[in-house]
Image (cartoon, rainbow, N blue to C red; front, side, top):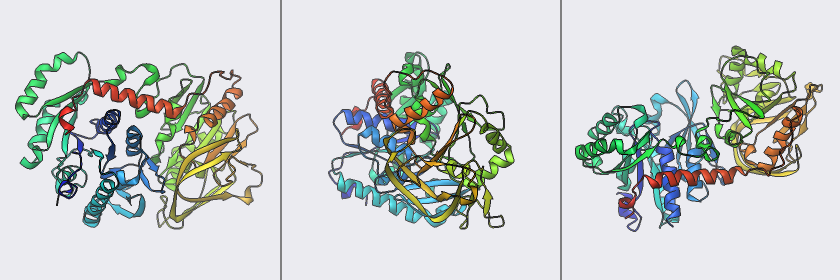
Length: 509
């Protein structure tokens, strides 16, 4: 039975499919969510299955993709793992952790995933949809597809595109990226590979990332509509060219743009990096320039070096050593520069990492205990069960502030009594959430388990001011910009830009 038959009063869902990965589905859903919120509707985002290590933790401690959390913010609602019932977190070597309704339930190889997890996956998707509608009978689902809906070798076991569209009898929008080239082939090829009952669901086409004069595509628009009998409901311009500098989409797409920064930040590009949205608040600071570090080199030109979260901490620690970056980091620690580790990055700053259950990248024929970077007297043991929870605490350093964020980790970290020569202090009143130390060269070394730490505006400001003082820079006298207010402003501007170039009228029945 289609869900529409079970819930007769539901508003018609809108589903955004793409001609390929990276066509712009996620931002399109984000924009539509805000547009409908502004129209007084009750939109709720949904993506049946997502593959990402950039995660969020909801109020119940459930993991979900950050992109669906961002879409929930666009709707003005609290994120919930029901909005992303299946999350696959890649671990490398074609292995992923499987998360259903926010909880880790195992691992799988790509080869075995659909054999072992297809049926339970579809059941958890249906369960989530029914739960959302039971609690929000007047909502309108805004659904994001994944990749292309017509990967012919996978379509019979695709959990998150046309199967969901048909189950909900959704009005579907097909988004294509003209910047990639071959836009006509993308659209026609995608539609021609659909079955007749699937084609009927496609009610509109969006041409995304168009550069130049929109009128120049008028003939192309007419050709597409004549060939497909589907209206082109929007030609969305290249938005980074139309946003003012202070309201750039860089916040959402993580591309640093400031050319005359007070502070230069280097972030280690770990092979298994996770939760890179942790750095959005830094990238939104006008005085900061961020560079991603992918290979060994001198780090002395950076004022702040960040070791981010990792999905495979042991594996990434071995990468640091084998690549030569570990040596670079140790050399950097003997300067007046500053080092900050988040989650896996905090664990790597310690002296030892122990992986008895092979949770963090150890192989069964390798030593389960390896050395960390050794800059903080901390030892970490990775346990079977994962800690996932939202956090509210109070910081002691660099200022007394209430802090909000979340944790996602298997490791339990304690001070290493065998390294009494290294002195550290707690950052928070909750003593196991993070530590810091001042080195002998005028810099600091610090780390925390709290994802989202830089979203705390006053805390972020005080931490950056420590770095400014170390460079003998003046402390800004203007009030700190709120990251969350800025994020809301950017979502509003994103929605306005889409709304000016998009006709959603036919979808709101």
